[in-house]
Image 1 (tube, helix red, strand yellow):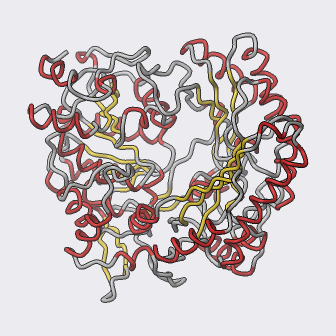
Image 2 (cartoon, helix red, strand yellow; image 1 turned 90 degrees about the vertical axis):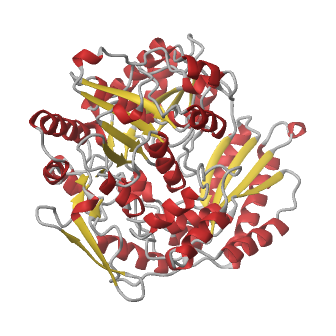
Image 3 (cartoon, rainbow, N blue to C red; image 1 turned 90 degrees about the horizontal axis):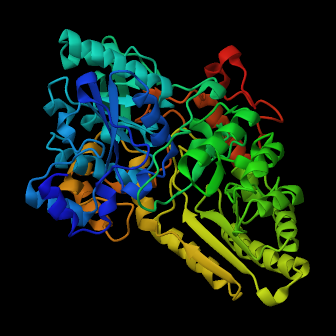
Length: 612
């Protein structure tokens, strides 16, 4: 270990974040490697190491001969201060080498509030922030993840955006880079070739023009760039890489367990949910293969907890036999089995019994999202009040005494009656407990949590405006005044971070200047309350003459050109608009298993058939 680093670690919180050396971490001989990839996660070690996508791509790249992928996480404020004072640049955990020495620097972005950490990490690495100021081929800066379905606020800082699932396209990009490096291509020549790889968006090859009122007029590709870049998907999930041998952290992380991915995509089509649209089409893994993966991953890692995960895990068609197969091994080996993503319309006594067998009995979580049936229909939640109450009745009768209910405030078409419906529903859950429990002396804990609706790109609600912060807080107060039962706890998300999230989620390329100004004024770790300052962002927006309400609160017209017009998730824009119209009509759309609604994502599947 570097002597300077050794001294620093004695003075910072959680030094285990910065030392590497974990079981299953990949270390290669640099003499056998011609492409080094610094895989950066713009948050703490505990958050980044809990990201299954990062673990998958880490394994995919390190299985490539001649390629070495190493991990880099954002240092906490105390570590950053020590590094800057000592002149220690940002480094990778596996080798300890400076990030600036790597061929490719890649960022995984799942949350807009991490944008300033991207700039901070580039600066800590000693790299110029903007792509235009990095004229050489090396290092190449790329970004991927859910946030990149609107890449424009980060566009001037990155060289390439990878859209969709990275298992295949990442290898294609790396192979092209290795060729470019070996043959001495210029960065410009490489980027033009990379733009021809499906799924790779090169921001510098697109010009953006604006109307006088600030709306985007056009996103125009330069010669050789496609008019629109469509995401990549992995067609065969059974053949896709799963990290059976995964890194075992040397300190506790947020998701410290085996994470078993059942399927990708979602059959439901909730109109507010970006993930439900951008991860289409639905593709699942074979039940026997999942059982094998789960057991092998536990055996290799020593983990005593396993989580079955997907956007809606209880929609996995072979869930009960999968649980049986896993429990046959988990029970004698004292491994706890958990299913965190439950829907109120398919929670059964049979499933509950299996969860009880799977280990410790934790609280149950359901997300009705809205308090009234009218609003649940408008957002296409396809869950009824009776679905929720029946599931709670089953759980309480089976011995559960804790339930969490998640809702959103500010959804399109919402009224005060819908807000008060949340309180009514929570009180009905309480009454169900009183009627169903066999042990009232234990009491019950019902937690109601609300967040502020954030309109996202590539959803039917991408045209909507967010409620102003004052209106959101008015609704919070209204709801709080009607939740007086001592067994019901109410938590609400602060509107400031949701407001900035809405600004960034539908922002255009002009926000890059705002992003850099906010970072230079101290913005970083914006997802963490101890660091976040909305005033810093408002000052930065004002400095560049931009109104945050223009991005967050304004309703878009049907024919408005979106900043993300050059990227596609495969779902047709006409379908999204039709779903918006159905929301205002209060009409639901059946799930994909019941009836295909013609979203267009099937075009991404082999043979044009979704595997629902």
